[in-house]
Length: 458
Ligand SMILES: *Cc1c(COP(=O)(O)O)cnc(C)c1O
Image (cartoon, rainbow, N blue to C red):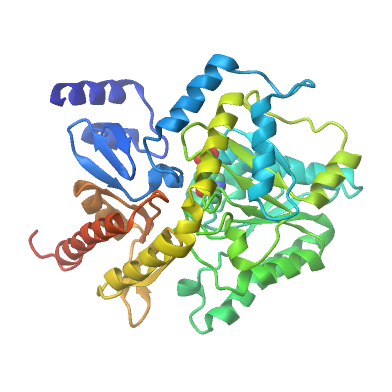
């Protein structure tokens, strides 16, 4: 395989521009070639077995190597590989999946709109929300409020809705009509408050923005229940209920981006269920098919669905592959397995609590780790200069990358989001596999503190 590895690296360097990558730096180093996967493990072209502590990109909820999903795809391709859903046609797979999604969703979500990705779900949501308000006679309600350090994808709409300034800097974003408020990051922004007080204060930043823009011009507030790519920022329990109250008071739609939190990641089917709130719409992708094929869905609550159906006329929006029969068949098999094999329930009752206890026990004692946090199978900690003072390292992100590189070298995939270290393994991870993952991670963190922070020889 050695020879192949070099050949593939050379081809990749010659012809492939990677997402979110500095191509020059990557080509100098050479990309790792992933060839095979099973359960929570990946193998590269040189035969290394790697623990995938990120479930791909937070998406392979059901784990790798499910032959039954491959069988479903094969059969569906042979039967009906493709037909569109635009022109008074449907297919059995999209109809059956829609019924299943209405079953697993909380009450009041009877309708879904299909996309191919999380970004497209967010773009769809933006257009749908604005079209909804126009349809019910309030066309001036157009502005969407997002949050700094939120992540909502990479299309022009998604990147605008997100609050990643390094993305805004490229391509003149955000587009008009999208504004941002500060994120509910207690560790940094809540120093002289209790978490409960901070949750309320952070929600009221949204109200301040609503009043600044004018409630009659604001269409929606959009947020991830738990920010994923921003570094697993978990808001205090008081945050979302207060956000909901503020949105209702000013007649603003509340949208949850469930692309990471959805389909069992937190131990609930959807992340907002953790907080006891009811969004008007929520966007999904990733875990919907566990990454086996690209598909996303916008779940539309009764208010918006009825407004659109009764008053909206044509919704001039859709994708060639909206409701793609093969993607829908695979998503249906995936969601059925997540439910009927008890995978989501196990995260809630067994592996999630086990991971959370072990995660805190393992990382709580390091000198340069603080804010050890998580729920279900999404967790994080932050690398800090001084725990007593709650002081972060200078040059945000440098330490995170250095730590991440040690994990990577030791065949463990966990990600750095700035100096937050995050993990989100496949939901099928077992207790012994959790022990193995955290044992390896702890050895890496020891090396990080010794070599990188204290500068002792490796
Ligand atoms: C990944 C992600 C997206 C974008 O999904 P893509 O499938 O990459 O377009 C949107 N929102 C959230 C919360 C995400 O984590």
